[in-house]
Image (cartoon, rainbow, N blue to C red):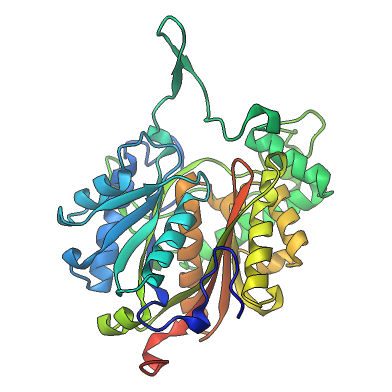
Length: 406
């Protein structure tokens, strides 16, 4: 393979530097201001971190660092707060990453690069978002009074800095994604998520959360009664005469997701049976008015640097913030929509901002373990506010079958 921007080259890394994800967990993904509204971000994440340690039989003091993505929290380093709440010792530090929607995937990418630096460390990495409890934001005006604003500024105003829905309309228009295609894609996402839920396919990846109302261990977004007739009745949500509606857009959600990532050498010492080798990661910048296409540009560059084609990728998990941008990215990469998000995506499950990129990786590992195809390639990708996108190329391996030094 040939190296490239942001790329980890698995063919050139020795076992003590090859990053591998050996465990992944998430909470249920619940609508904002719903069942998880009483839990703050660290209270969503701490049970996931504790579950990962228990599942992997890793002593808490063996963790090198905890790297967590978060987009709309109140600061204060939610990674450190969460790890201490999870019972990790004070000797374990924490780092919080903010790349908005990409934060969870970028936290995992950062941990992978740290593993590639050598020393066989062990990291907990992932993302969390409690939109329900996110603090109100305000600028101070001349008299000192607060001037509240709904979201942060992502780029200078000269670049347009569109709201997410407007940017989704821009992508739909620029890449000629019709309303019918968007609605059909959204319906398929719900149908797949409903089927997966009924089949119990999410059960093994979810860490239950205890709330005042009881234990929460199932997603609440997938709509079993949704159909094309219902979707056709939704009016444009962001631009008059547009094609992006509430029906073909994701909803805001609360959730947390995390992984254990270490070197292949350390994974063998821990007795890990299998995992996802992190072959490469990349983040690209694009025109902010077309921010939804960022994931495709990152993935295109990543695959080229790794000398891989989309045809050779067996699993694809893409964050479906909007059907328009998901379809535009898939068209750009030449990936058929029926190959993506086999158990549904964010259109059905919800978008928990900083957690969503980590959820993609958790979903990849769960699906890879289910089909058990040794050596299967996977792609996780997400578009990001401000005109960016992050992608990760992964490979599922039966670790116990790999001879020492391979």
